[in-house]
Amino acid sequence: MTALVALAVEAGYGARHVLRGVDLTLEPGGLIALVGPNGAGKSTLLRALAGLIRPTSGSVSLDGADVLGMSRAALASRIAVVPQSFDTLFPFTVREIVGLGRSARLGLFARPTVADREAVERAIRDQELADLADRRVDALSGGERQRVVLAMALAQEASVLLLDEPTAHLDPSHQRGVLLRVGELARTHNVVTFAVLHDLNLAALADRVVVLDDGSVVADGPPAMALAGDVVRRVFGDGLVVSQLGGRTVVLPNTS
Image (cartoon, rainbow, N blue to C red; front, side, top):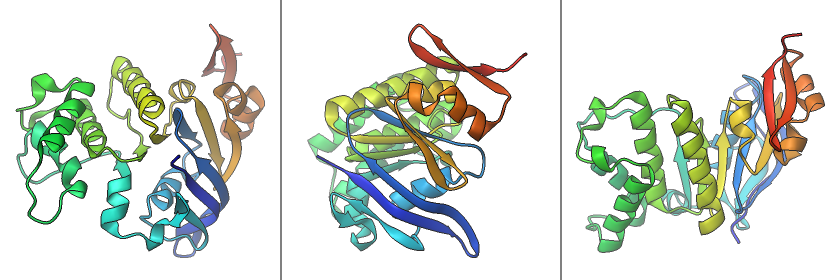
């Protein structure tokens, strides 16, 4: 079973320390959400897990192998990263952008196989982009482009999916739909899925929630535990109240 493990990871930018001894094990089985206040280190942790930055101490391993010791091609075939935004200088179509997700699996000058084309079409269907497949991506709305980027990552068929605000620019219906589909992908295809989210109510849809504050993990578990009232007050302040509605954790503004 795939396991992405951070062990005592510290990281930052120059003299600025961001992550402070993070221990975290990510395995398949459902959607794992990462939440925390602005500046807590969420995007930095995602970059460290993807091997995009080198920890100042500690290590990140994928199935026991240090990610920094893996070739870029090997790492790209195992870990897919969905950024907050995606820009291209060329007028690619949606299908062409999604097809870029297969590049990590193709050798130099290799042509896409039937399996590659099927993976692309499957990702397009999963993200409900069939009607837009031949449209230029620069003609799409921000929300539509975000779904294209997610489809590109799904087409990669990696064993780890790291998502940085995958619901940005999406309307509430598509926000919920994206998270439910990603969670289902994790459960049915044994994919590690780890998503940075700012909306605590969206995070409550996840199977597991990791709370990061000032570069450290302060809670890790099911939503009802990780987003318990005392945790939310300690990390996010007194302006929020936590309730249970229909068996699900709900975070609301404190109007009292």
